Length: 106
Image 1 (cartoon, rainbow, N blue to C red):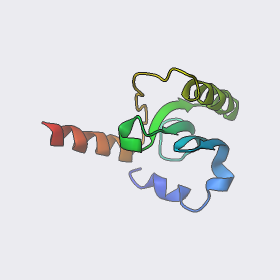
Image 2: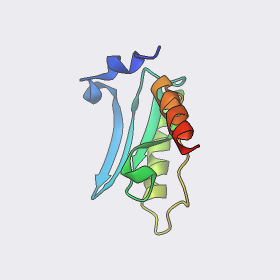
Image 3: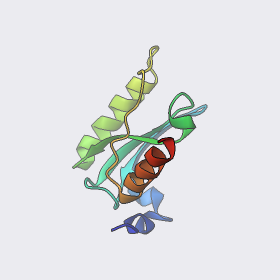
């Protein structure tokens, strides 16, 4: 389970649902193999998480993922941005990263 993400290496085009990329902002939605749900939307924006990706939503179906992607493009291109983005990833690697960074802050 911890190395499930390796099955995603080199096949992004097959897994991609949609991608929005303008300047330093990326909203990317794709299928994943390392989470509880098979689709997710990640946002990369310089105002959040030091410019690294934040997984903002996960989905059970491709249709939900498409709608979710459009929703996040609308949110992240609005005149007023959210105060914060919450990482909802259930990927094992993401969980380990959160644990490590929380311990380093203590």
